[in-house]
Each structure stands twice: as C-alpha cells, then as structure tokens.
Length: 276
Image (cartoon, rainbow, N blue to C red; front, top):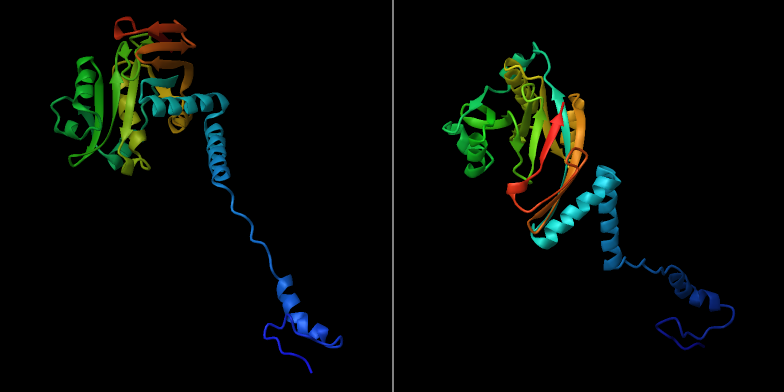
C-alpha cells in the first residue's frame, strides 16, 4: 500500500508507476516562461528623444536641424531672452495676367484693399498696434472675406521694409520694380482650398497694374511648407541670414552685405539690399 499525498508531488510510488504519478507536475513546469522585462523609463525617454531627433533632421536637414533644436532649447530655457532665427530670401516674378484668375477668385471670395477703418480689420489675427504700425509705414493690405467673415490677407510694402521680428531693414531693388510681400495668411478651415492661390492672384494683379515685376519676401528656414510653396511658384533664392539675439544684443550673419553686424538697439539696425 501507498500513503496518499494530495499534492501528488511527495507521493510514494513504485518504480513502475513513478512516471504516471509525476508526469503532470513536470509537464506544467516545462510550460513556464519568463515574461520579458519592460524597458526602463530611461530607455523609453532615450527612445523618444532619438525619434524626435531623427524626425527633426529628416525634416530640416543637418544644418537647419541643429539651428532649430538650438532655437527651441534657447526659447524654452531663457524665456525668450535668447532667440535664433534663420531666414531665406526669395524673389518671385510677377506673372502675366492669368485668364483663370478671375474665375478662381469668384469661386473663393471677393478680395479688396483693406484700410484701417475697415470693419473686417477687427477679425485680423494681429494686434492693433502691429496693424497700425504697418499702415503708418506704408504697407498695403489685400483681404478676402465672405459675407463679412474674414478669410485671409496678404501684405505688400513698397520701398525699404523694417522687419518686426528682428532688427533689420530689407530693401528690394530696383525700388521701382520690386516690392516686398509678407504675412500671407488664410484661416485654417480654408487652407486646403483656393485661398493662398487667390490671394497671390490678387497681389500679382495689384503689382502688375503699378508696373512692378518682382515680389521679394523672407521665409523662416524652419517653415518647410512655405519654402516648398515658393519653389513650386518658381521663386528664385536670393540668400539667407541668421539672427541671434542674446539679452538685447543682436548678431546677424548673412550671405548678403553687410554679412556680419552687431546691434544693441533699433538705432543702428543693419540694412540689407536684395537685388532681383
């Protein structure tokens, strides 16, 4: 006779039935597997950082990617006291009259010159002080609206343009043939349609009627959609510039004269000619 062991593990068996008595135990033991250990928080953080770096350099390239990362880091750690911007300058030829332009604008919305007393100005995405400065310095605004709802605008300037993000005066030349365009804006819900094309149609018509042949602009080197848009429209590259501001001191490094400039106030800002 054999003693009964409920566990089946310590059961006393004869040699003949030992295998049958212990088989279930060894079978269950053989199926045990160690669960893979989860990655540590440090590894997860390093993985996310690596993916972000890869995405940044893939989007901007090595040089602009480094500048972009520095600009983000400086802004986030100094509260804006240290900033970096890189601009690319483009010149776009004013094309001949496009027979399809009027039809496109009819499908989009009416576009007209907007003056400071226009009720539509209250919907503009810029503060009143900035808008007042633009008109006071001679800029011209072409705005689109549908039944009183603001849809977008484009700004044009004739002569030297004083930039409002950095201390610099941009001068498109020759002055009687080249204008400056900036702040092309379409409300988000209309950006997939004809908005940008129609604003450019209106701007080209306005320039063409006044004898201008070129429109010059600056684009952030970190704004890849805008860069691609200018390239698709046949714009030619004129040069680039980097502006580094450190607690009020601004350093400019440019491919155009004066190439290198240091300023401490708007009283001695650089002036950059951009010949078309």
